[in-house]
Structure formats: structure tokens, C-alpha cells
Amino acid sequence: MAQLRIALAQTNPVVGDLTANADALVRWTREAADRGAHLVLFTEMFLTGYPVEDLVLRTSFVDASVRTLEDVAVRLAEEGLGDLPVVVGYVDRAGLAPRVGQPKGAPLDAAALLHQGRVVTRTAKHHLPNYGVFDEYRYFVRGDRLPIFRLHGVDVAIAVCEDLWQQGGPVAVVGEAGAGLLVVPNASPYEREKDDVRLELVARRAREAGCALAYANQVGGQDELVFDGDSIVVDASGELVARAGQFREELLVVDLDDLPVSDAEPGVFPYGAGDGSTITVERLVLSAEPVAPYARQVPEVAPRLDDTGEVYQALVLAVRDYVAKNGFRSVILGLSGGIDSALTAAIASDAIGPERVHVVMMPSRYSSEHSLGDAEELVRRQGINGRIVPIADIVTAFEKEIDLSGLAAENLQARVRGMILMGLSNEHGHLVLTTGNKSELATGYSTLYGDSAGGFAPIKDVPKTMVWALSRWRNEHTDPSFLMDVERPIPENSITKEPSAELRPDQRDTDSLPPYEVLDRLLDDYVEKDMGSAELIAAGHDPALVTRIIRLVDLAEYKRRQYPPGPKITPKNFGRDRRLPITNRWRETTA
Image 1 (cartoon, one colour):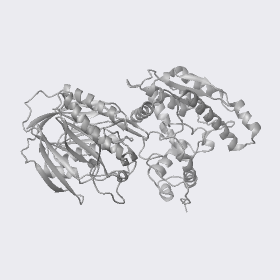
Image 2 (cartoon, one colour; image 1 turned 45 degrees about the vertical axis):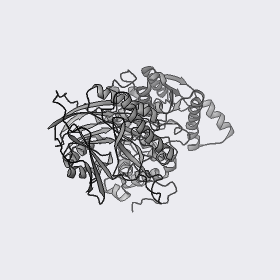
Image 3 (spheres, helix red, strand yellow; image 1 turned 90 degrees about the horizontal axis):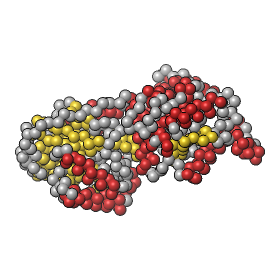
Image 4 (cartoon, one colour; image 1 turned 60 degrees about the horizontal axis):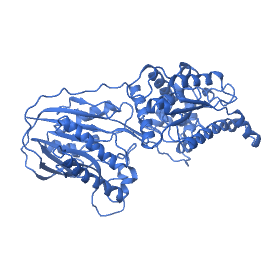
């Protein structure tokens, strides 16, 4: 039996910044070498960042990806790191003749083995996901080669992300061909409670492959997606050996013992993949002799966050990376004294620091004294930059020129606030954060070009009931990664008072919507689970409420299309996950 020390680089690449990503690869590889690793595993498409979407259809982008891969292999050798094998993801091409229905250039979601200054072997994702946020049949063609390379006597196979999530394919072939270790670069986005599913999946696939399995996952925010890390190593029986932290970059270094020493002949061998396709196994040898026995390091199993803490950390990381990766210096938002803007301000302060967060309190003739007081108290607690811009006179100036009443008059107030925020954004370069939650977005309880105006929407996938839970969680917890060192940053009154848009006298959210505890359960079934009206009623929802809420949700599709992007934290968000036509006469019926 043999030993190997592997290093999983749980890293945060930047989409399209191939130079910076290559620099990061060298840095992480150097750290792995300093810690005695025999193999370094990076994440899926690390050199290009993930997901790159339609960039893969550009010849220039794929050329740059391949060139960067070859250049960084040489650079590793030049910097004295060439003897340490590196597995890294990138974008390649299959070299297929063009045909209708095939992505332009036949791109591959690829991974390569770098060693001694060259690209030793290449592979590509076999199973292409085409569900949820993924539509990879649009971008890639399927890979059909499985490298198994011998490292210090141990046969190491390479698969890519989705190849674990679907039956058959590379995992089945590894189980038949035989290997001592399966390494898997991943870019698996976060959603609530996915870590529990992920561990069970990795353990099951290790047992199917009959070998230890190392799962290296990306971390960081990319537009609507958040990647949580949570890299995992299990042994051949599926028992957990080591696990990285969540929502942070980390080099997880793990010693694997009792790995089988292989004497399989090198060469090329076809195998049935169990899915109707054939995968060609390429066996090659880097080093045949096992390493001399060494003292094993105690493996790290990072503690798990609770479910609410996971969501909060995901939102903080999403805001931090959206701001940093898009070059913003600061953010601005409207602060009403209510719970949604209070939570958004706390997330922003934890993400980028309170000194870079600007809030504007914009009281109207209908704003209560306690709302302004709660907003001022939040500014004091968090140490953010606050200013007051009363809007009553601005609204009056509009009303002198145009006769508006009812809902149109209410919406004018929201649009004046949006105009103020966008004006300050233009003047000072702030990123405007919108503060609407998923319950409001679902039912259209927002004003187009008013409170929906902005550049990023941190809580757009957070139901209202979860907004309260997250606020309570943050008042009870902090974390070293938070850049706001404040206990209880959200005033208690903002959490406990009845929610109101305060656009007319004595307005309450319940004037227009059912209690949020009732609404969110119904929205979960209709939006997340795609239940029809009959199924919703059978599930116990009130028939009249079902009819009313379905109508609100369906009619608000045009608003959601114009809403800023925001991080996905539920199984189905408004955006990449849920795609419905705006022009649509289909209506659910309860008869």
C-alpha cells in the first residue's frame, strides 16, 4: 500500500481574468509544495473562471485559455515547481467539424495534468448538465477520454463536476478500470442545504468507483451564483477524511494512507460508460515507486455553519465579490427603518466594511417618526455613512405638473427615491443596492423604476420570513470574515415592528398581502416546486388565496425581468432558474 499527500486548492477565480488566475495557480501551487504535497487539485475551469457563458463561443477566448494553460505549465517549471503535478480546469476545444446544433468551435469543459513544464494529458466533462442554472449543451460538447495517471505507484483518475452527479460515465468506468484515487475539479454553486446532499453524493460515488475521492470546489460570487467551497475528501468506503470550510479560500492538505499500488499496463483502452457511450481510458505513468513512509498529518474537518448562517455568509460573499470584481469602491442604498433595508445594510457592511457603505434616508409626508428614528439608530450602530434627503417637496413639485392619484401617486414616491439614489450613484460612483425580498418580487409588491432601481439585489432570493431569521441570526452572531465588528447591528424595532411601505396613511403590507408566514409557504410550493392550482389546494392552501397569489405572481413577470441580478440561495431563484414568458395567456384555474 502507498501514501499520497494531496492539496485541494479551494479558490476564487475571476471570470475572464486569465492572467490573474494563472498567477493565483502559481501561488497556491507554491504553498502546496511548501506543505509537502505530492499533487495539487484546482477547481473546474479555474484558469478562465466559471461560468463563462457565451465567452466559450469566441475563438479568441478559447485560444487564450489553451495558451494560458501551456504557458503556466512552463512557468511552474521555471519557478521550480515543475515536479509537483497539478490538475486544473480550463476551456479547450474538441476539434470537431462544424454542424448545426453543435456549439460554435466545439468547446470542452476541460481539465489538464501539468508536470515538468508541459501539459501531460487532457480530459473534459462527460456529463453536461442542462437543468436549473445550467444549460451546458448550449456551450460544450461531451468529453470521451478518461486519464488515469500513476503517481508514486498510485493510479489517479480525473473526472469533472457533473460527472459525479449523474449515473454512468467516468465514475462507472473508474470502477471497472480500477484506480486508487479519483480527483474531481468542481464549480458547484451554493443553494440551501446542498452541503448535506454533496457529502452523501461524494461518498456514494467513491464506493461506486472503488477508490478514495477528492472533490475540490470553487468559492466566491459570480453574478447570480455563489460558490461555497466545502471541498471534501473521502476514502474508498465513503468515510469522510477531510473537509474544507465554507465560503472561504483555503488550501486543504490531506494525507491518504493505504492506497493500492498499481501495476496496470499503460496504454489506451475503450470502456462502455454505462450510458450508451464509450469512454477511452488513457493510462500513463509519472512515477511508479511509492513515496517513503512518512508521518501522517491530522486531517482537518472544518465545522459546518447552521442553515441560517450559511445563507448569511453566502449573501455577504456575493456582495463582496460583485463589488470587488466589478471595480466598485462603495455602495449606496435607501434606508427606510424597515427590516429589508436594515438587513441589506448589514450584509453590505459585513461584506465591504461600513466606511464604504452609504445610505440615504428619504422621509415622505407618510413616513412615521419611528421609521426615521430606527434608520438613524442603524446608522449609529453600524458606523455607515448616512444622510437625510426629505422627498415631500420633490414629490409636490411633480404633483404640480401632473395629476396622479391612488397607486400612481404612491409609486411616484418610490420613483423619486430611486431617482435620488441613481443620481448619487452617477455623481459618486456608488453601486446602488436594491432592498426588495423574494416575497415582494414574486407578488409584484414593488415599484418599477422605483425601489427596483439599482445594480445588485442582495436579498432578491430571500423570502420575507427568512429576512427576519437572517436579521436575528446576525444580531446573535459574528464572524472573523465580517468587515463590520459590531454586535447587534440591526435595531430590534426594525425586526419586531409590522412591515409597511409607508406610501399612504397607516399603510401595512397586510393591506395587500396575506401574512408572510402564509404567503411564503404558498410561494414555495408555486415557485420552487412548480405546483399547479389543484396541487396547491390539495396541499392545504386556501383556494381563494391560491387564485389571488397565482394571479399576482404571473402578472409580475415583466417586473422581475427588469430587476437587478442578485445571489441565488434557494433551489429556484428568479433569474437563471425560472424562465417564463412575459406574454402569456395561460392561467391556472381552481375549478
